[in-house]
Length: 383
Image (cartoon, rainbow, N blue to C red; front, top):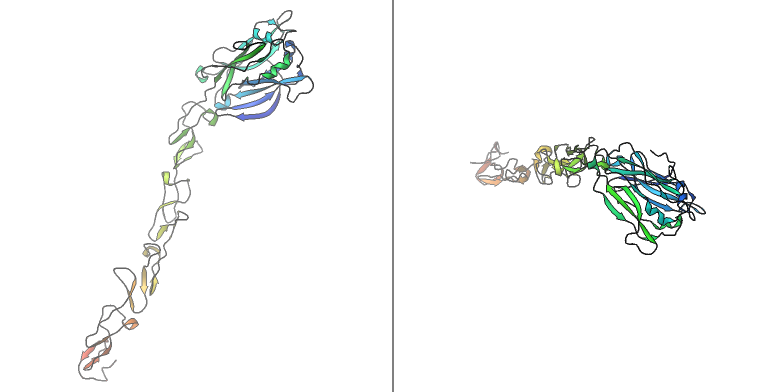
């Protein structure tokens, strides 16, 4: 592989499928020079990268200097790998002392299934005023990992009879997101006057594709190491991503009840209840089971499991003169009867539906059972 020194910017851009590192070469005297001065410039990506764009510019250079800014597509970021690079070169053609139109004699092109990793202009093994491109290409591990090549033409700009400075008009020598460059050359097609343009071919580096039950499968850029592996990027509602990057059903906890599962358990391992034990209800504020609270007029409210429904009147016991209604569960006033007299009321009617007298009519007297009996008054029998 060509040994080339470059100055990197350290910047990276994450596209839809892959990471592109932005790099630049060293500045050198180019603006007013002819083509042989391009041999001062080297464009090279790393061993697991492919060129995705390049631009000759004066940005960050001084005086008459220019340099290349270029993008390197990370092949490993889509879980693909490259074979060892192969060094190649174009045919020699006249370049020394010539202006930009002489670039159309040169065509940099990798073989099928390969991506472009580096290029530079060199006079090596050429004679007289001839020069050529030396470049390197690397094949992906499988031809299926590289998409169908697409041809793209840049905009026409003035190039014939122009020195290197005019290459900075070519600002769109770039593949789309996730694509690697396979070839480039200068052409005149559909341009007029002294205009020319670059024609490049690009192909998408197909990311590895995984499967995923109950979610969306990861692709290479999202951590899919091998085609067909079960690796999830995101999960459907009611599921969460495990440490193994699988989607598992959410399981919620619930003190004093039964936890929600699946779609009803929005966040795994949180307290969210589906139902509560006796004496508890699901709080509308927290989703947890909280103890029921009952009320009781004229008595003591039921608690725990005896308070079946929260915020209802349910009594555990009643004050004197009251009893728990079998129909309503609340305390109702006792009602006593009295034959031969006036029935007791309130606290004096200790037991509901019993005969308990408060006073007796004439001709009746109180018994030991607080009832009225017929007969003559006897002080011995008075209460």
